[in-house]
Amino acid sequence: MAKPDEDVIDDKPMPLMEHLLELRTRLMWSIGAFVIAFVICYHYSGQIYLFLAQPLADVFRENGEVRKMIYTSLTEAFFTYMKVAVFGAAFISFPVVATQLWMFIAPGLYRSEKKAIAPFLVASPILFVMGASVVYYLVIPVAWKFFIGFEIPAEGNGLPIELQPKIGEYLDLVMKLILAFGVAFQLPVALSLMAKVGIVTSAGLKKFRRYAVVVMTVISAVLAPPDPGSMIMLAVPLMALYELSIIAARFVEPKRKED
Image (cartoon, rainbow, N blue to C red; front, side):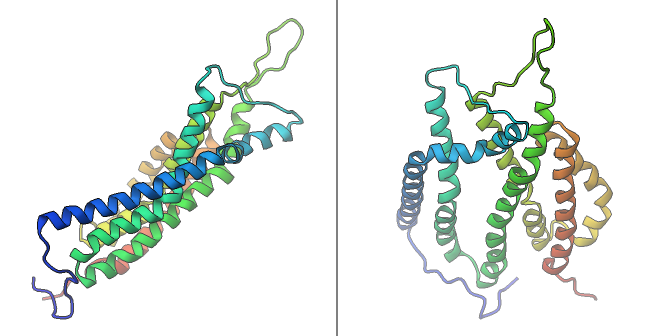
């Protein structure tokens, strides 16, 4: 289908070598931003660790206890700080990387396509931060209280069970949860884009609602810690985001012309 005259591609034909040079430039900017962010995050890796460990420290403090993290390998703490720095650098450098990616592909898009994609580029990081905030401020505190409840205090001659969290295992779990919830909150973006190109429709999403509830419950059981409170705290926002996706799909889906 021909595009309207005003809907053109703002790009000029370029040889393959120039495209490769342009790609190299964008990659260099992205890598440079990540490296700079990594150096900064590694310098403040101790503060990032304290931030990620704060929910567990708060639970111990509520119980009137002062605990500490342990590591059982000489290199465990060092590589944990490296992971924390990489994790933080990915967050900080993402806007630069996304901008460079957009600058590379945008010249090859029609103006209407740019207008259609731009809102999703803005909504995606916002939803990711929302997902990370939900898991950090709501899910993790409830999950940690649930797991600590399995401790057995010392009574008589019995052997107590006490949590002694390893720094590497703890931070790996926290970072995986933040990543998983952030990705799960991309549901409206994914479904809206699929509706925009005609893969799904708002009517089809409505018919699939009952099955979507089952799928999101299973996803919550897989991603969230294995306690009912955490699973509900992920399932409810996902269901709300699904309803939001239906509304968004209604606005962005192609309008069918009647014969």
